[in-house]
Image (cartoon, rainbow, N blue to C red):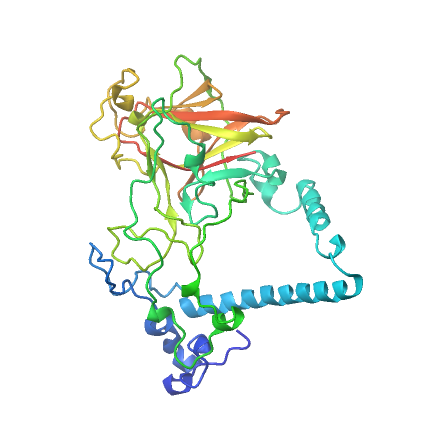
Length: 430
């Protein structure tokens, strides 16, 4: 903010660069910076010949409230970060040029390889003393070795890089007939949106993007899918869960993936990029909203049967499930009308349907076919609510695991009918 002049009044603001207006206001004109017309520039739809929205569009997106900073602050932060990146890139190019002029091509590894630097950071992180930082403070809830163990994960939350490869559905085991939950919603239209005047730089103002991209406009950039990078991701999510006694049950039935699970997620390439095409649902009342934020997941209830996942490359004996139990009472559409698990396809009889989480509620989970059963009391002891609406269970904690292997993980609910609806959102492992 140090380089931003105060906005005093409307007349004075008109003399300032567009990007600097209404960001920092004189104490006597604070309302100018708080006014929605100065903080937000957005609209929900621009008429076009080839697409007619089936849902009436709003004038502007929702969420234009005082605690949201608006486009000017985001623009300032974005440009500040971009300036740092461009500066270090220029330094790198200068170094490349200066060294190769004298030493010739190719540029020696010492000038651009960062493997040694990376390995130095990684080795120190893996050997940190528990007293360093705050991670060890949560050892009461999950294995402390998580603090120094690279974690892998899959989720249906968006936006995220490489959406297909990092999804939960990418590790789901199909049912015997090949069924895997998929996104049922369809995108209303594909391709880029028509130019939006509210996203354009006003006439006569500095066009930063045109300068740094040699006047190549964003609207001219063709949509390109993300490169398929590694689907393993380091996780810094706080996942807490209590250890408690459990009932070890015999595996009395073959574990088959249930067909009653459904996928809740936005359609499209929800990778968080400016060119990502995501959502655009027929039911949307603001098709130009462009926000990819979706707490997606795989939803089911007792009737859905087993949810089975094939977890690759488990090396440290850690598997943690994150889910949302608070969908109790919101019935799954896939299992509507079912009175038996998997609609009777696997010929397993049910007990009487009960209200959500009754006293005889049971949770079964299986690691490579070995079933563990938790009754209601044991389930509550194991359940950890780490933050608001963040619920986790440790399914595997084996510090003695010596070699990497792929593990089949499954879980199901019993004695709660269609009333207890769970949404599985993440699986973490190492």
